Length: 184
Image (cartoon, rainbow, N blue to C red; front, side, top):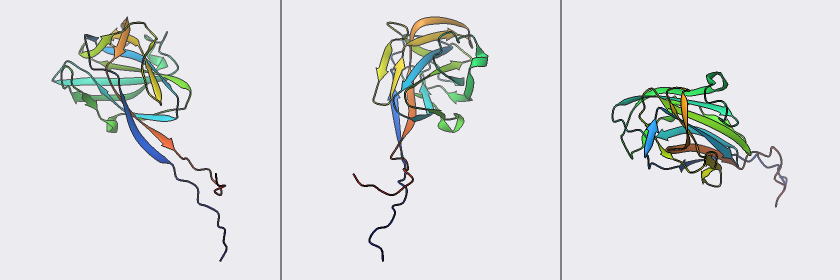
């Protein structure tokens, strides 16, 4: 029996995390553009939103690499990752847009990605910002920037606005090195 055996590739472990911006509201319209910078490889798989409606709302979520700046009226620049109807939970409450209806967005570390979340009614809540493009909130994995509100799908914009909601995402830790364990 050999005293040394090659190790099996290390298994990666996926950790689910979330980042809540705010549910302060204070303003709103049909949509909200915002940018996210990621420091680690992540997969965003769900968004929870803030709506004043307690009835069914039609939600669409779009994404693109890079900033939303300059692309607010260019629908062709965006990829739709969700189109669904959900039951709004009203002011100051979380309205869940389930992961099963949202295509996951894989974002590599050290990159900027933008999102546009819109309803077909002016019931999406957001908060007045301080400075367009400034950091609103961050954790060890990502930074959320102040963005713009919008009236109608890819319509007139208002800035600065802070998206109200929760980003659900996963990160992978300990990915396979594909070889023997070389020790530490």
